[in-house]
Structure formats: C-alpha cells, structure tokens
Length: 260
Image 1 (spheres, rainbow, N blue to C red):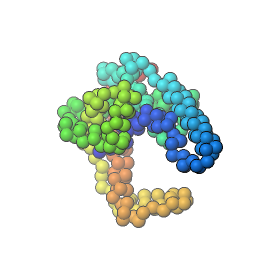
Image 2 (cartoon, rainbow, N blue to C red):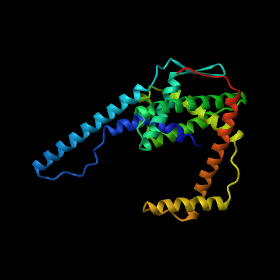
Image 3 (cartoon, rainbow, N blue to C red):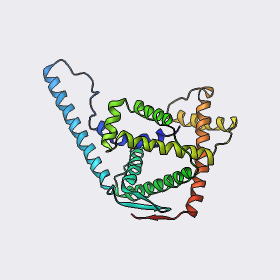
Image 4 (tube, one colour):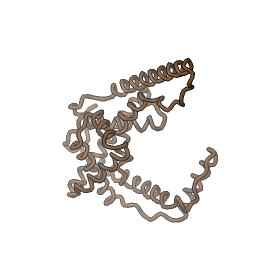
C-alpha cells in the first residue's frame, strides 16, 4: 500500500508543528557548575520560547489559508465537496512543502497551494466516484491493518490520538478516510497497472542516484541490495503517469465547478 505517502503528511502536519514547539530538548548535558547550568538553562528556555513562537506564527499563517468547513468549495458530477475536505487536502500539501524546505505560508505560494489542494480534491473525488461505480470495497481487516501501521509510524496510540485531536477527527472518521484511500488504490491498480521494469531501467536509475549521492559525499548500498526497492519506485512512477492520463480523461467528460 502507498497510503502513508498521502495520509501521513496530512496527519503529521499538526504533530510536526507541535513537535517543533517542543524542540531543544536534545541539548547536551549541562556543566555541573551552578552558574553554567543557570546560563545554559536560560539559553535553552529562550530557544524553546523562540521555537514555540515560530511554530505558533506558522500555524496561524497556515490556518489563514483554510476555509469554513461547511463551505462548498467545488461540485464534481453533482457531488458537493466541502471546506472540511478541502482543508484536509490543503494541510497535506502544506506539510509536504514544509518537509521539502518550502514556505507554504508566503503570498507567492498561497494561490499555488490553493489550486493544488482543489486539484487533489477533484482528482480524488473522480477516482472514488468511478471506484464505487465499479463496486470496489475495502474490508475491515484491510482498514484495521492500515490504521495499526499509521499508529505505529506516528509513535503509538498516544501520539495517534494527539494527531487526530489536532485535526478535530475521531477514529471512525479517520478509518473512513483510510477506506476511501484503499478503494482508490484498488481502482488505480485496476485502471493503471504497472508494467514490467527491466534490469536496464533499474541499473540506469541506480547509476543516476549513485552519481547524485557521490556528489553529496554519500555512498549508496550495492545495487543488489536496493534493486527491489528501485523496481518498486519505477513501477509506481509508471502507474502514476498512467493514472494521471486516466484522470485527465475523467475530467474531460466530468462536470466540475470550482467555488473558491
């Protein structure tokens, strides 16, 4: 499953910001000298306060880009999409941009983030509509397995609850979202199956990655150790290209109206 690449950034957004506000806890042990301890503690407290202020400022800027949860942001084949769904897509994109070192709160990024969020929402809706027309379903065991994987990746039940609370979401709602993503992925596998990846393609990908790593002063593991992983990456790239073409075909015949 590739769900984590989509859902974890969305869920982890609030967690990442809250963790940023708690930074500075890995500062080296202080000297036994009371004056040194006092000075280092003051420095630590100041750094923590600055991080908290920075995190709060970023949260406020990102929140300004959101819309009312009940607002209709788009209509796709007569299905109304709400601000709540849009805000979830927005949060995902904002988190991904932050992970790449970009600032989603800047004026230059605001319109780009908005259109990407709407596009993501419309695409997901079109895929789900078609998947449900094909009567594709997600089993309870599949949903529970993915939920457990998310919980483990986020650090356990406590952290999971913290993140869900930050997103104003309960477990039932999140499992419904997991179900939708499972259904969408099953549909993707059906309409955009990945083809065979050749040894030559794997070697070319490895050589390019090895060259880039060498320039960065790093070294990749031997090809035989990462061959299977590279094959998976290339298959996913193939599938994403096929799916993008399919979605454009769906858009061409769909009734889509953007409201924001």
